[in-house]
Length: 222
Image (cartoon, rainbow, N blue to C red; front, side, top):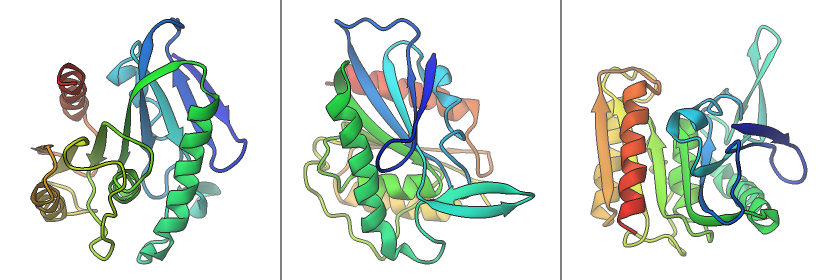
């Protein structure tokens, strides 16, 4: 895949596109948000593992810089223990996506937003509340912010599917958090596919395979 880094306006991001672009083809867009303390590079390796021919990928970088030790820098979407900046961060994420869509010369069909850990929290609260239409949300080892209600605009339970996974050995965000979030989203009426794995706070090959199958199902059911 062809990969470029972009730092203009709003939030930085990595753009990954197929090696051979067909200008007449419709591509789906997958936006992925990294976890706390990581960066846009953290999930970029997932693109070729998921599908290197039919999707465009945006890996967005979080706005809050962190010193994670040993001279290294990580990033966060909101401070730990303080979710009051969700709306501010949401505006930056949405503006970054909108700017890309406005200047994109490719034909984009479906859009998916997803994230790992804190990026998954933003996926739920930003993606499902966004005025940008998303066909699906991908929530990996994450949970909701219980103090923040989802404010639906164009993404509703009847038109946005959810893929959600969690590890039963997760010591960062316990699996009970994932189960509670799953149950709440189902109660709201979402078409949600949920998987648990014998894994820790991570993304395994099994997760990727199930995600690929879910994306294929979403494509066929449209």
